[in-house]
Length: 420
Image 1 (cartoon, one colour):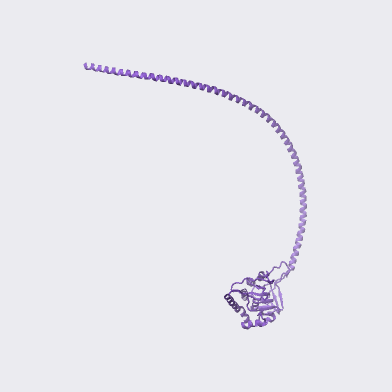
Image 2: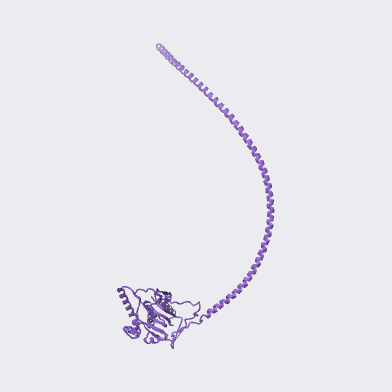
């Protein structure tokens, strides 16, 4: 029991102490709460004051906004009034515009009606003009047809006359070809004819040989005629080509001298198997002579080439004559101091320079009148190259010869130095 009493007393003491401490703590908390309450009151008072101030500001702003709204409403009323007045004004103007529009439309309708009537009148006028034009056109077409018919008749007549004139300017018979055209000193030349005139230059052989080949391709039985009217000679190489073509031709080639054949042309005449000449035609042989230039070595080489060509073209002439080359040259200078041995054909035939003398030549190759404009020119290569004549400072006329190919020489009769 004693123990319990002491324990209870101790517990009471402890409780009292604790209670005292609690009371003290509570008293302290109350003070703090009072202090906080005072602060809150002050804060609330300040907040209340602020709210009051804000409320006054809002009320003031509300009044201001109300005034602004009143002003704006007044402005809107004024604008509505103005727009209403403007609308009324526009309505009046629209009515006036509609009235004007109706008036204009009435005027346009009237104008269109007038224009339509005018157009109808113009259309009638145009139809009348077109009808008149069609009538005139028909008249012109008829006149044109009549004129065309007359022109056609005239054209046909002119064409007929032209054709008759052309026909009259031609021989109008089939060409005549004879296998043996030389009869009783009379030679008949057909249109298988080649002309060799002036000077033999580069291209002359091509001109002659192409025609020899052509006539051979047509026929190998009938003769081909190489007619020399006046030829002074020329390029040895070209002349040799002509001789080779004559020898190779299957058809016989008749070389015919009408006026003059000198130098290379005379060699061609002499060496041809078939050669003919008028009795008064002249043939001329001489040594190869040409204009050369260069140093001594070049001159020596050129002389060697000349000597070789002499052996190839003049020696056969001497052999045909039955004499040596030396005798041939000697006789050249016996007959002429310059070495230009020339003879009329009726004498030259005795030297075998030409085979036959003809007293009459019938040339059937002329099938078109010589004065006819339709007659085509048949110029040889030499004519086309050498037809431009010039005058030197001394007043002498001359023609420039084309350059020779290498190893070639001019074998040309040129006493007046006309060919340079």
